[in-house]
Image 1: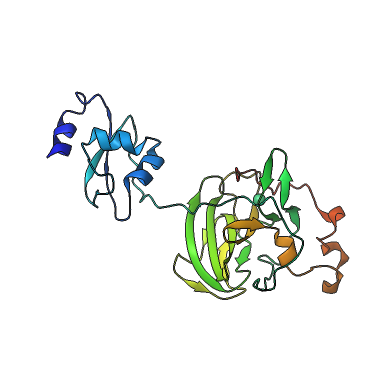
Image 2: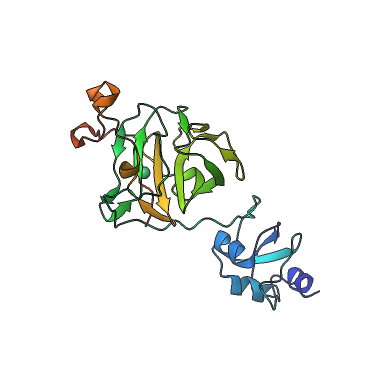
Length: 246
Ligand SMILES: [Zn+2]
């Protein structure tokens, strides 16, 4: 078998590296991305003619890699950046509730330095309950670079909501959640400067301004101090994030 030949002759193949055992659902390109090695290089190091045709259990040499990635490599959802927010809430949007009760908005959606902040940050203590902003299906529960532990809930009509930097998840991919259901705990995973929830709403995968979709938490709640829609109330507390989103 060609793989075994190259495996036995790893040195002669000119490619020191590690051996990765393919897990269900993994593709050569996902594996390549995870190891930072082009899939073509992996294919050639293993004499794989057709990169589409690898199978679970197969052992492949990852040239140049030093450490084996043991966790299953999953396809990450591609999150596109917003940048053209409309102030109009579309009629087909799901009715959202705030994902955390009484948490101040510490950072708004919009340009932030040279980057673009695709959601809002809600400052809250580690362990505070995060609730689904609307009912739907959990379509992602895992870790994304910068976002840390992240949950994505799909609601229908192309809408989904994103909850990031979590400490713990109470729901898993494939599970249906109802509006207001506790789905996670606030944490500080990913690139953050303190515990916070990074919350996004996406339509057809493009980020939109969550403040347009969330109910006004102003004086109707009976407490002017919680009028987070007033810019003067936004704090510069350490509960922010700084992940690469664009
Ligand atoms: Zn954020």
